[in-house]
Structure formats: C-alpha cells, structure tokens
Image (cartoon, rainbow, N blue to C red):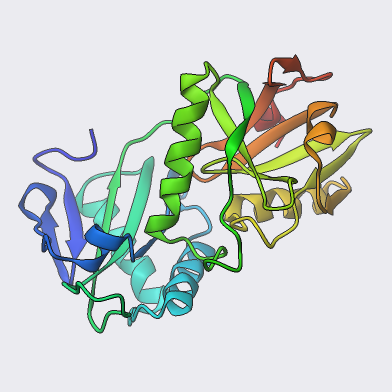
Length: 275
C-alpha cells in the first residue's frame, strides 16, 4: 500500500529503494515514540508537480524538533529539494509525503544526540473519504499542554489520536472529536475543526490543539473572502447546535460534518467545494 518495488525514498543522505531501507530496532522513536514528523501533499498542476505549503510544513518540522530537543541539521531549502527529488525518482505527482525524524538507539529517557531523516511518498486519497462525516464526542481528551509540547507534531502524541479514532469507529461513527482539559472542543484525531453559525466561522484557539497548516490556510482564504473567523473556546453544545461545521487537515483536506452524536447539522454542506 505504501510502497512497491520501484518506490524510492530518502534516508540519511541516500536515495534508496523503500524495500531495502533499514532502521535499528533499538531506536528511541520505536520504543518511546520520541520522534517528529510531517504530513504533506503534492499535486499535479499546469506548472508541474507542486508541494502544498512546503515551506510552512518544513518550518514546523524544524520547530517540532527544536521543541523536543531533537537535532535536525537540514535547512528548509534542503528538505524541500530532497522532497522534490523523492517525487521525481519515484515518478509521483499526486502524493502524500511523510518526512520522519527518528532517533538513534537510546534506552535512557534523555534527548538523543543522533537522529535519522527519512522522506517518502505514496499515493493516498483523502484520509477520511469524500462523504460528509458522522462524528461523536470522544471520551478521550487532548493531552494537557502542561504535560507535553502540544504544538509539536510528535510521533508519540498520536497514540491519543488512535484511541479516539478507534473508539469512534467502534461506536459506529466516522470520526471522533476530542475535548480539551476544560471540556471545550479541541480537534479531531488528525484534523482541525471549524464551526459555522449565522455566517461566522469559529475555530478552537491555539493552546490545546496542533495549529494545522491547512487550518491557517482556511483562515487566510476567509480573510480574502471577507468571511469572519473567530478563534475562541467552543462548548460541545455550541458545536452540536451549529448551522454547519467542517474539518480540515493535509491528509483529510477539507471535509464537511453531517452530524454530531446523531444530531444533523442544520445546514450540512460540502465545504471542500466552497473552499
């Protein structure tokens, strides 16, 4: 699914066939989830293959590494060049790109001194499909921002996401919505949330969410279209009683919400078409 015999990836200065790439089984990332990553998309355009917000994604990767004390010595420019080479060598255009910074063998609970960089890509449709979503309020909360670097895209943080997504599917929903420690709407396991009421968009403020790059792109587009966006705390009842809502993220792109806990949105719509 993620690679074939012809897939080329980048690993520590070399372009290798994915099937030949190796990692150490004693790596700190494998044992403790201590690593950082990004999820990026590329698209085929009239001007060739273009990577969506590539600078912003790699700036965030470097920022995540810095916050976690993980040494990453590649510049944004170098990371961008390598990624275009990976796409070219694997003959991919419409792709999902995964840069991963993973740590060397280290069984102590201390920051690593050496890391590896892997960049690969594969064809991947929208993560949650094309239909508006039936979501539920998860019993799992987003991690307390005083316990982790919540704004960093860290491998281990996504155990929380897996638990919430799995629970939602077991309950018969498409996806879960996590609350923050104060009981406010935070985000979905892999995407941000926007709620619309009376023509105004609301989205949870930074603090307990991963500030998504697609989220910021939506905010920027709304400014250009004179659509008011307010970043503030959103109670679950406000979410359920909203006129409409949608999620956004690089993997999911932009996707409308059909219902919350079985309650239909008043004006369900395909926000992916309008935005």
